[in-house]
Picture (cartoon, rainbow, N blue to C red):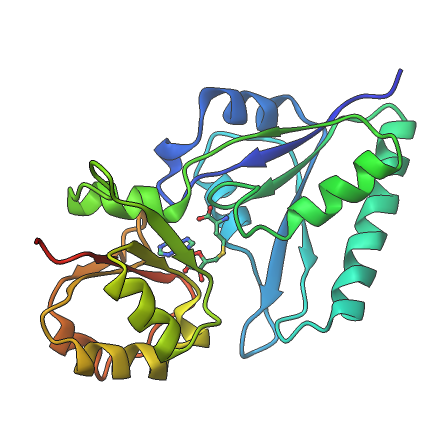
Amino acid sequence: MLNTISFVSLGPGDPELITLKGLRTLREADKIYCPGTTDAHNKPVSRAALLIGMLDVKTPVTIFQLPMQKTRTQASEVYQTLVQQLIADVQSGLKPVVAAEGDAGFYSSVQYIYEQLIAADIPCNRIPGVPAFLAAAATAGIHLVKQEEQLHVVPGKTTIEELDRLITNRYTLVIMKLTQCDSILRQLILQHPDLEVHYFENTGLPNAFYTTDISALQNRPFPYFSLLIIRPEPR
Ligand code: SAH
């Protein structure tokens, strides 16, 4: 009987926002694999590995590099290598874990690895976690959706027309991966100066930043770990 491979959600950045189950699973594992990239100086960086470093976990951590400008082929080579490694680990009796920031099933590349392992009949389970947008809404104390309101998540690739339509239809919007749509967002904000906009960077971390002052966003570069919540105007 093979060990089960757990996919652990680490939460958005505050080390106290991992679940007890997630933390216990990290501690009981033989190995932890985390996604990472390289910075401008080619140095490996992994938000997930940094987060694990803030927890009392002794299990060794291995970072697997996801190419920044990833083509499908490049990324799938990385996933396939990791899938083979994970299968070799469980076949030699080890208990490996794959960890990812936020929730590991919400815009999370590790889910592709999970799916490939399931297809290969390897037992897996996923431990849910707090996604960044829920943590962000909590830090701002906002009611993310209320009564009949609906939530719509936009993962970076969008157009001004799409955002206009969603705003007119009174959705609460969560916009993520802002580096992919920064000029569109600046244009949107100029066109709707009365929007209720909440902007967040690095939620849960010591360098967290939050503002509702949309004029402050015109010249601010949006880092990778930033998101926007736009609430419908009161009727
Ligand atoms: N699995 C993650 C989402 C990964 S997609 C989750 O559940 O939250 C990456 C995007 O998530 C980033 O571009 C950013 O928009 C958002 N994000 C993740 N962590 C964040 C944080 N601590 N603060 C602000 N945005 C964050």
